[in-house]
Length: 193
Length: 193
DNA sequence: CGCGACGTTGATTTGCCTCAACGATTGTGG
DNA sequence: CCACAATCGTTGAGGCAAATCAACGTCGCG
Image 1: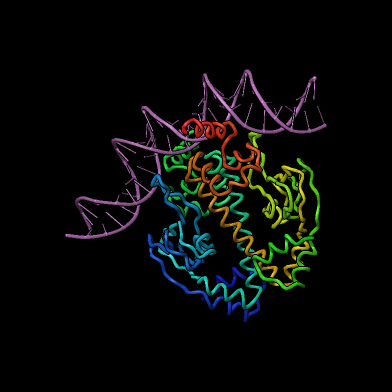
Image 2: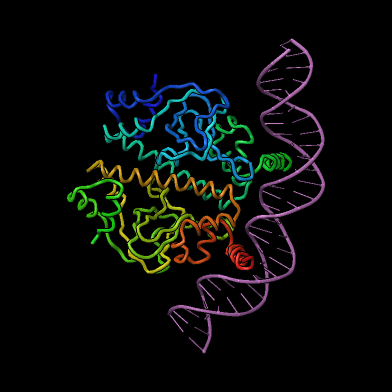
């Protein structure tokens, strides 16, 4: 039943049947309704979430009242406010379901136990963190060096499947622009063709 | 002699005398002259660097010919092109010494051996990656939600000591603005006082 | 001493935002 | 199951933060 998280883990580190079962056993499957929050500012993120079905976004609300999408997740992706989770400090982000979703919760304490129990699990989380770091760095480079339109093009090229799952305003704020401006970019593309 | 790297590691995970010595033994101390590169685009970053003395910057050169500082490092910080290092793929960044410096090199293969030898070392790298990820995320939020001046103020507040070590153009491109604009921000502050 | 690296200042331009108004689509309660 | 309200995306006018371009002062060092 939790075979998806086992598959995910196996791809990072080979696990025996027993190890796989132990790993999967600490996850709690939960349904999350559309528009429901699993993380909120000023509350500590006690869990991270592995998405089985559905989609999520993590965002902050700036002083200007606008919101800025920091990350999103669909099937087989993880999401939480990592800064809050790893330091166990109050969150600054909202994490919200974009659709009716099903997730596997991993409790912070349980994660620590896993890592103590078997160093293969430590390896799994190490690889996840490293890849996350590399991903963030590529995104930062894209934000610093490219124009809004170039970022949009790059996103389409890299995540064509994801595109259809995200509302336009989520994509826009993920790419660091307003919905209006994204709309104009798309419109320009049509006209030029 | 490599006590700085041992101190660093001990703060993340307690190590026995023996473990500490094993950990430190794989690092190679090297001098790097000002303006010398330790990582270059299209070459794979085979090492990560722990700074004992001096300062470094990692940057990419955009299509426009400008350069964009992705990260920097002074004493007790790490630096490399992580995307290149962890995937062992060609780099996109330059990593350059800003001053005559001394570093401890950690070879990618040696790092893998360390992690195999003792899971405490795995933990060290896991924690480093997690903190790096959290740092990157905070920076991304700052870039997306704040104005150039607010980012500058935040930097001064958080890293006052670092400020004096970095040339203005490195700071500007780290904060995501031009040197000219940073200069104007500073000038405005003086006038307003 | 002279040249390159670094920082400053001002004039001009521009990429993207803000604000406002309006269709289209989705969802919901009566 | 319809009506009305949100929610979501589009379009246009105007504005601004920051970039670009250009010229110049200063310092350090080879």
